[in-house]
Length: 236
Image (cartoon, rainbow, N blue to C red; front, side, top):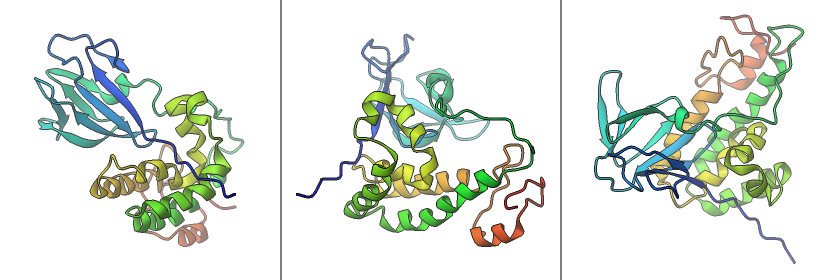
């Protein structure tokens, strides 16, 4: 009897004045059930207004904001619920953290060979996921290979939403498969998410540099061996 592959459901965080919300915001003009966040990755979310009385807004530029019904947002983005301004990461203190990972001091501060090697998964998987994200059956088959080797069935329940995502951090772009398989996102939103995550990840791994690699082939960067901008070592 063949086993059935189960993809974890996309997690939801509710925002509002009511005490039953995931994040309780006790402000007069915030509705009882004001908005919700669909967790797409450790740093990417779909922010959706729940028909609130005073609206949900996004910082379109440094000087203006626009009212939104639904939008892909990042932890660093500024949002407004009614007239109250928040940076998204202030509402979600656990997001973006990987408590299971300990950053050890490097013998050579410019040695990023391990981090660079992980980027091959990002480069290889991006076009594959972009091609197949419209086909749930193909996503399920990909997850049967990737997901089962990384996590157990009970991981979401035992590790929590962000703990679960942290466990997938070494899985390249495959961390997005549960989101790309979800009916809660449109195809356009899935493609926008893929592009955003790829651009954020496919960069020089030195945190003080982070030069975007753009469309440069991984093999070409591998032959280059080091970053011309910061001199970080990618390949010994």
